[in-house]
Length: 220
Image 1 (tube, helix red, strand yellow):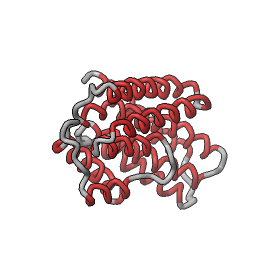
Image 2 (tube, rainbow, N blue to C red):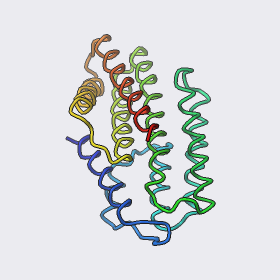
Image 3 (tube, one colour):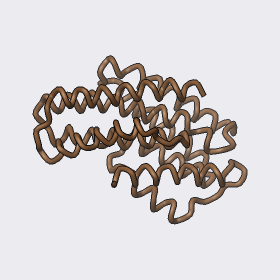
Image 4 (cartoon, rainbow, N blue to C red):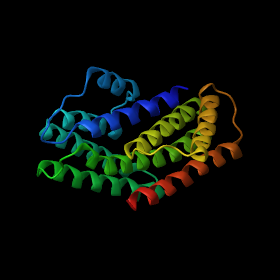
């Protein structure tokens, strides 16, 4: 239920910002919007948090700060890429390059509506989620079940954000895959034993969805 609420909050925030703001209007996010932003934000200072700040500053017309937020996220992505598994490195670096291009466009007054930011921000979320899948598996085999579960839950949250950026609902099959993964994450967080094959199958199912979403959204 909590995961579903997070997804609804992110989707509502994106829809609200897209509907009411262009660069020339410089609207302010209503207080209830800020409350929702706080609710879905994770505590660690990571690229997805920095990009949420970029959305907030863009919406207030603080474009210089928005550029700084996006560039900070790109720098964080490159830091993550430096120690990422080789199978994940390319996607993370590619997302960082996309963020750099987006920051340049904002700086040059070439982004008139916040919706133009969603493509690269969603790409970043999926790259981070893919990387967390690898870390989740590593933690599991290091016998850190609780940490593995927390990482998997955060991965699911990131993917829901990524889809929300594109104003697209999850299909029944996609939702089932994420719900099943959340169940596994909850068991791990409780310290319960999860079968190795079940965990691998869960992670592979999510990985397949990430590949599918990347192909779908890059074609837009």
